[in-house]
Length: 260
Image 1 (cartoon, rainbow, N blue to C red):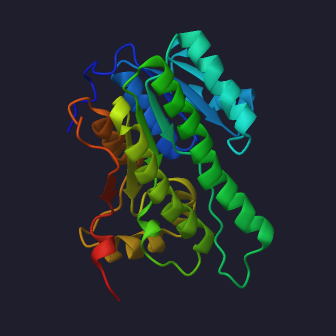
Image 2 (image 1 turned 90 degrees about the vertical axis):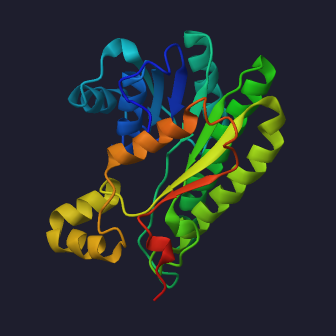
């Protein structure tokens, strides 16, 4: 495991989507601790973002925030161009933005389906592909990290659109990794299991018994915390992992091994 206090990522510029959620903030904080400058985007206004970042103790000189709709390819391009122009380069991209709809197929609307696929798949592709092509043009041996999920290969009755979108992310990761490998660009996926973050954290905080129920379903008998996810993102980006590309790092505590 990489020491978070090292300066391994000094002078590196890291771009993170969905950056103001629990996991995104932890990823940003750990990259900053490792010497990087972070460019953050999310759906929140500048005022809302400043409040969230202030609460997370971010120093103003360590990040740049912009409200970006990841489903808008032009907006994504403009954001990445702005980051590059401001900081001079880009080295790591974390496609973390995602949304989830807790409905089965009988309740899921066309709008629900479209929104989820647009954010989770199109948004990830727009960010990752534009950045990867930038890496090629500039001769940068960059990293692209997709935030996947163990739901990509496990059927969930109330998460159909989410599961399909994360399965698509897995193939997007592999196909991009193959094309960009000759340029020294690594593309990987991190697929967590039950994480105490985002919607799950809200639900569990309101229903404490559910988090214990979820914990007992996990073979290692533990729920993942957001900072543990962030640590794995930094590990994947460690330059010593030069052979790691097109891979899915599944950190689900053995959930995917359970067959009911």
